[in-house]
Amino acid sequence: MKLYVFRRSLLDGLSIAILISVALSLILNPTEEQWLNLPLVSMIFMGAMLVGALVSQILNSIGVKTMGQNLFEPDFEKAKQEAKSWYQTFWGWHLFVTVFALFIVGLFKTKFSFYELTNEDGFEGAKRLFAGIFNPNWDVLPRAVLNIIETIFMAFLATFLAIPFAFFLSFLAAKNIMKGPVPFLIYTLIRTFLNVTRSVEALLWAIIFSVWVGIGPFAGMLALMIHSIASLTKQYSEIVETVSEGPIEGVQACGANKLQTIWYAIVPQVVLPYISFTIYRWDINVRMATIIGLVGGGGIGTMLIKYQGQAMWAEVGTIIVVIAAVVWMMDQASAYIREALK
Amino acid sequence: MSEHILKVKNLVKTYPNGVQALKGISFDVKKGEFLVVIGLSGSGKSTLLRCLNRLHEPSRGDIQFMGSSTKTESIRNLRTKMGMIFQHFNLIARHTVLSNVLMGRLGYTSTFKSLFGFFSQSDKDQAMKYLKLVGIQEKAYIRADQLSGGQQQRVAIARALVQNPQILLADEPVASLDPATCHIVMDYLKKVNEELGITIICNLHFLSLVRQYATRVIALKNGELVYEGDPKNIDEAWFEKIYGESAKEVHIN
Image (cartoon, rainbow over all chains, first blue to last red; front, top):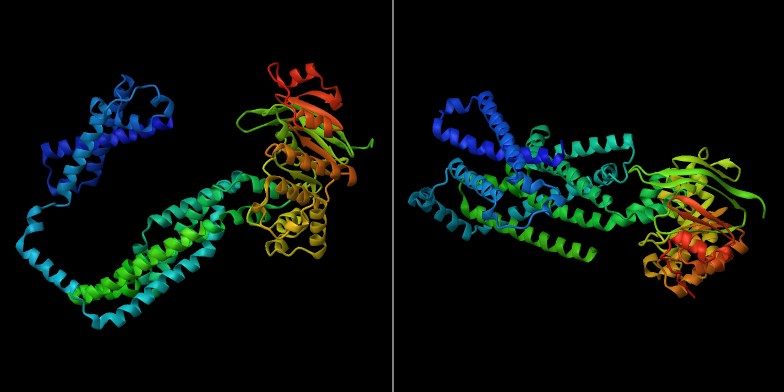
């Protein structure tokens, strides 16, 4: 089976399964207990997906183009038909109905309510909060500054320690370097490992490390470091994959071995983008470090959650000002530096 | 002049995508020759050169270089004896000219030393010597990407020469240069050939250059060898056979 047919079937199956599920739950109106019966629910959903994939297959074979077909079909197929406005096509309505259904389900799932948004009691609370935030208590400023310095250095050390690991791994995670069966296996393993690591958010790493090494900046730094290694390696290796082949050939023709080729032909080509991405990563890490502080990663985030818990909004206001100022400055500085490095 | 430095027998190269770039090519190269390979784009010229120093691994056939098969020799050893220059020069843009030339010594330098940039004084002296030979020693400390195309190609020649090669492979060395610069670079290749006695195998497009510089010519067409002989004997009929009937010869002066 062609790859795009598989993708088409998956997407169409999913969209039709969602529509079937919505219809079923409206008709049958299942109880909470029934919803929690995961084997049954997933069986029904899988069945619906199968039906959807079949429907998609039938529609496409009789020349009606579904959403998945329109998205995934190869370019030469696309070039065969004249362009039509979306409302004149089946796939257009398919997409519309799917997105509409998702929107409605979304409203129910998030318990969307204009009543709560405009409810007077709640509104009073918000007013108190804003009154506090807009009248910051500057007495806590020295401590806030001290804590944000801790946050900045958490981010700095995390980035700094991630560089050597990411630098080393990036070459092993680059397709153009890892040619041949064994290198490709290593490449695949490292890529998979990095993807899994990256899919665990820094926030979750922080929870893990705050149990491991105790609540505080060290836990936050470790969490950011793990996340930075995974992210930087991916970005670095993508740069390695775009280097031009010419200099590599040139150095290889001189009798250079693999390491010499990397060092003399590839590293000079990637070093500036590496620095650029690294500075950007530090910038991102400062932002993440404040969030990580909320779950016990130390720094300004920990201070923020403390005052928030006691509803001391004036103190929270001060902290927000400090965070905003630092994030803004980091953002500007890193943008200027990256611009100059181009 | 009669000693054979290179013997190529039934060389076949099939790429993984199924394209057969070379379909069984045999020829010999004598020491000190200036052998030019001509043919249309896609006729297999570049593949041929890259098979010689195993930048591309030959699929079948045998290449005897200085009496031993290139298959059995270590790649590193083989390549130090075969310098190569390219159409797009393939220098490292961010490094200085001198550093680029020193890269020709990588095949002789241990990995550890080269990672720290430790090249011996004699390596540096040699590099300067060959920069002088190609007439750009005063540019030694300039970044390579600051030079013009012709100058970059001369740096590339110097880089190939510090390898102390027996053969210099030149893959369309003047194809991305203007006509005037073209002759300067070709003249340096001729100098290398005549003064240093280095055998040259060079891919070229322009027949007028071929007649001026080559001591012998081979022509490829669709991965097969269709002509071998003296450049002066390529007449109208041969030209049409090599390049196709509708082709017209372009002169470059």
